[in-house]
Structure formats: structure tokens, C-alpha cells
Length: 261
Image 1 (tube, rainbow, N blue to C red):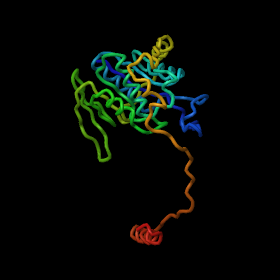
Image 2 (image 1 turned 30 degrees about the vertical axis):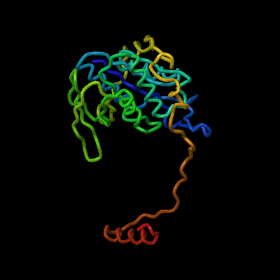
Image 3 (image 1 turned 135 degrees about the horizontal axis):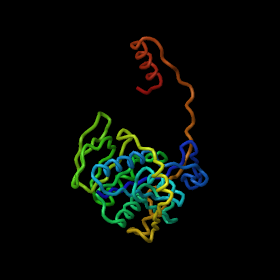
Image 4 (image 1 turned 90 degrees about the vertical axis):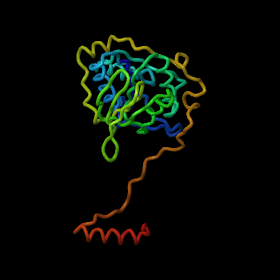
């Protein structure tokens, strides 16, 4: 079983800063971590490998410093890691990011399963995983909370949604996005950490992967951030008290006075 896990190095959420002109995250000098949802994807991949055998390759698109995120995944148990890094990728939106990752995956060769975290905590779009599936022309299942069974030809999972969950089976190859309910990520072992320090991480540039240059980075991104701002705190407000029936009547009266209903 050839499994690829797409991860992202994200800024520590308590340290996020925005470039007011470009509308992009300022990453230089900001502490970074592996996107937490991606750790659930890595753990899911490792468990499938333990059951089926095979290889887990972790990839990420980012600046050279993102190699540290890859090394943590190797310390957890991943077999190989690839960094996709080039100034041509700078400013990519979710479409350009998923296009670039899909091109890198095609360049790497055969794969049976691609796992991603449900979403990244810096952008919260949950679009890159599905985008990879679309660019590769393969099936996808999002918000996976449990892997039920897996074979050489298909995988069956539980997919969560607002009202509960549904069981879905899809043929391989496929893309899954993993939710935090799926597992508890293992901690890196001492031997794994030593392996990660010695492991050579391959770097691929835009010239090494199967992509069209005009579709990369900010120029290849169909969306733009026009403005960023911090929402102003709400003023006023009141807390209703008393019996439920009385509070409901009071609420309806307030809504009518405000001409909301």
C-alpha cells in the first residue's frame, strides 16, 4: 500500500500576523507547528500501513523551514518525506496549492491512497484535499472519523456530518480528509527522532514536477485577498432571565422592536 500524506506547516495560532499589503500570512520569525489536523492524517496512514504493509510518504509545499514539520512526521513513523519548495509557489491560494501538490504527487509515481487533514488551522478552508482529488481525477471522502476497513482495491470509512455519520466505500486510489475524531496521534519515539535527524529529505522545485508554470503561485491563483481586518467587538447586549416562556415572549418583543421580525 503506497500512502501519501499531505501536511502543512502553520504558524502558531497565538502568533498569527497578516501582511496588510499582500493580505498573506507573515511567516518569517513566527513559531511554526505541524497543522494539528494533519497529525491525525499521519496517524491514520501509519495504522493502515501497520495493517496492510507498504510505505508512508509525507509531502508538504512551503519554504525551506517546512522541512522541520516533515521530520516530525518521520519521527512519528513515516518512511519518506518530500519538500515542494520554490519561490514560484509563493502566494498560492487553495486552488493553486492543490494543483501544485497534485502535480508533485503525479511526479512521485504510483500511489494507492492520499490522506490530508480535514483543514488547516491558519486558513480553515478545508479545500486543498478535495482540490487534490479533483486535479487528479480520483474519488474523495471528506471529514473521515474512522477507517472501517481497507483492501488493495477499496476503503470503507465513516464520514461525519451535522446529523451523525454515514458509512462510505470508495475504490482506490482515493483522497481522504481526516477529522480529529479518527484517532489520537502517537508521539515521536526516541528512535524515530534519531531517524528523522539522519533522514535526507528530497526537495522538488517547480521545474521538477508535472505542472504548468502559469498556474503556480499568486499569478496562478484565481482568488485574491482584497482586505483583512479585525472585527470590532460588539457593544451592548443584554441577558434575559426568568422562566423560559417569559424569556421567549420578551425576546420576540425585542426582535419586533428592532424590526428583525
